[in-house]
Image (tube, rainbow, N blue to C red; front, side):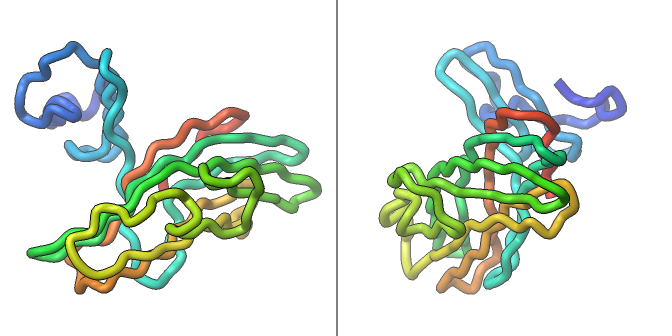
Length: 186
């Protein structure tokens, strides 16, 4: 599925790339006309997600969760943080849960890692259960936080630091959102 105005663009076959998929699948592409941001749903499960380029050592907003006054929402943010150069790559990934609410123009956000039963204002790679990750050399660290700076919304932000001199530093993510409003890629 894609926007009508993009019918001339070759989005490929989701997770199968330019190859034919073995199993039938529903592939939904983002508003970005590229072959890398999609959701691929098949009998074996789902693949894909949105991609956000990160700025090293800076809290970068990945997704914005809308929240109206006296409303609330819950969701799961699953992600893979990747740093790479021409010869090495570093990958860490996990899922965290979030809850958001708003009262009189003040938003509140709590983050809960998979490995804990308590909420935290900042989730690090040591708290989210990503373990040692898949790292060919060096280190990749990050913190995931909520920013309540936007009006009537909360931004989920990632601050990543890699020991590599990266050509790539990004996050690929999916979101399962339960509540009003449509989350927006940042």
